[in-house]
Image 1 (cartoon, rainbow, N blue to C red):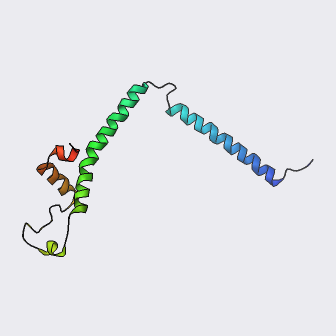
Image 2: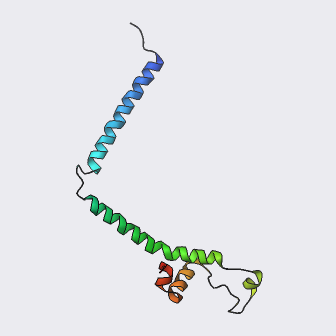
Image 3: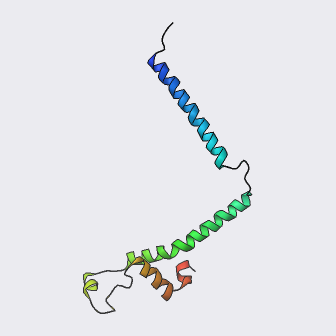
Length: 112
């Protein structure tokens, strides 16, 4: 009786491991995914649109403040000046969001 080569034994072991991985992933899939989706394509489309709108409303003010901070001219005289007029208008991100909302309002931040 001939002995199997090491290469053949390794291939058989990998085959058994691959079979076990496939079986385990099928079991996990069966537990976590419903057999049939209870939502219609239009419901999923609406949910995606709502999620995108919420994300835009939450990130747009922060992005506007970030851009205004980046565009703000900061010179050495501005940093050392003690007068209110020479101080930068926006000192930080959250202060910028608060100030834009208070001074410019929602319409400016939303692009309208």
